[in-house]
Image (tube, rainbow, N blue to C red; front, side, top):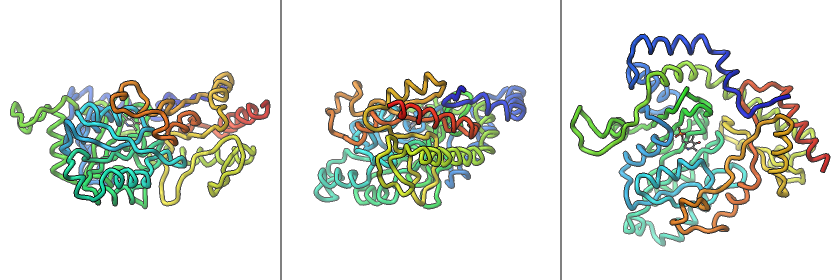
Length: 396
Ligand SMILES: *Cc1c(COP(=O)(O)O)cnc(C)c1O
């Protein structure tokens, strides 16, 4: 049996008629940049994310860059984020001339650890005025990794205490919730990606910034068209970062299916959990307590709506790469998100971090393995995947 990590062809087959008609409409209009389909998508995404405004941009990376710029962050500033995320989070901070500062993550959610965030800030600033005096540290970018939101309540508290802005990297978490509120609606700005493999993926690059602040929305709107408010008048230097009409048309069709797809991802995740538990492979019981199975299945914490952009297990005792090779031979697609933490990337050597600085992120990079969890996955395919994992550990 072949079980790919993701099967976008299966998704397209089901909605082909609607998608093709939507694309045809844009072709007939010959309006390709911004335009009515982008405007409508912006309204629909704002409403979906429970925010007042949404601004379409060229990618998730640009959503981060334009958000940072709109928040007034720039050369010489510092921004805290997670070392265990897709490269673009820290890349965006670097590319606006600011400096990424990393804080370690929690092993159960893969997201930034609020206790360590507090510790970092307390150690660095003995009182809350010194953060303003130093003037450098400006913001926190919590990343909602794999479709589960970071622990926003303590993050927002500590951000307020130290006068830091919060920009959410929600690229993997559209529709995820924390205490019944949607990802992207907590910070000053929220950033989404429509990269084809994301839960809401276009047919090319695309992104969106959401916010409740009208001024910030206007700034992002200005930054995406070279910083001009009216044609040929530039008060700031911006970017060419607009969302295509074709992408917006495709995304508007897919947005109508998003909740159904997220529900199926959740169903698939709980079926995996059940199968792994029955096979005696899990190192955590349903309440998250450790026992001694060889794998740890992902935890959906109470009060959060996990959208399972990835279903990521942890493989203990250094056997991850071997298991991955075995699964590849058996036709099961897997991926390692992420094999190297950002503080150990060559391009960030100038930041001065070293191995051992963020032990949780470093350990997880050696243990994580993402399994297929896409909505069209069948129970038979999942049973096959778990059976192959069982076979691997049985043969020792
Ligand atoms: C995908 C992703 C991005 C970047 O999005 P692009 O659309 O590929 O530029 C940023 N952050 C995270 C966490 C992502 O997963």
